[in-house]
Length: 435
Image 1 (cartoon, rainbow, N blue to C red):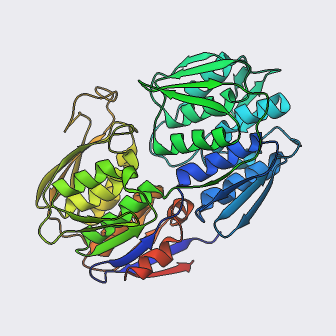
Image 2 (cartoon, rainbow, N blue to C red):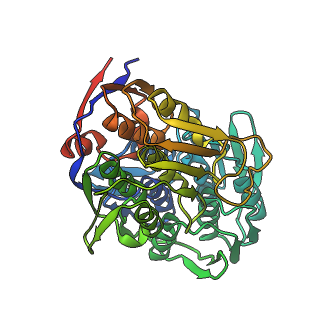
């Protein structure tokens, strides 16, 4: 089996323009939602990422037709030929569990393999399973996956123990065609959730938002096809803004609206970054030394967990001690040893630093980090453990004092649109080869 490597030679400040497409975390969910329509649906401004191919293969396996052309994806629902998502998809991403609700509506039964995705922490299926059982489904968790059966899903009241994005998506996808009303309390409100709800509304779903993280869904008898254009990926946009800052350059990011980056823009501004913001693009620069900061990740509208990996590299180039407190995934800091091997001065702790005690308090999970800057990073041979950590490794390599070899690049290609071309356009000396 061949492995792809990236070799990076630091080439000074990264400067230029990057255009981001729709979010990885949105496009696959829209593709699953399109299963429920009575006619084809089209998703525009879709990123060309591995996640799309994986999801398309799953949909085609159960009987849907997926066409991809440039940045446009059309999903044509068809009769379900097999309500089981193949075990070959085990562990590839988190999408199979989101297909349970749609498959129950379309076929009355479903099997999906166990969830996967990046190894950043536990993704318990309990919230999803409990929700589907509340709708009236019979659900059995086996060693190889989840079996479910239901003649009819009925609206229910669901109180999520934590505002989980995935669980909120499962409930939405089950509720839109369920009989009666569903009320979701403590729902996630990330932009990608709102985007999915708006797409379902275009398909004919009855969805309303209420205060205090409450979503009300009035089930309908059928949905139609719809068209939508995805908004720019806020994680990718922030990552490229940091790429400019960490190397002493400036990157102008097109395609992501300002309202998706309110919190991180303010965070970077407090560190000394300067911004130019228009309706079309956002640009960040740091003419002076960056200041350290204390940041705690949280659910939306807090500082997103996916923003903290590039931020950690930026902390290594800030003048002083910075603190990062991760409250969303208990193993999100698993990428830190790779940065340490490149000379980053980072210590991780199992206590809650830089914020109030979170749900990982007293669990032993190492979820806080103290970073000393300015660190002189050196080139290294690094394996990327997940998508977001992969981007942080590229940033560290870009600011290091020597060449680096990065392995596991399939992770970053699963989540970022044409990253090699984007980085090269900014001036990074990056070569890709298979071994």
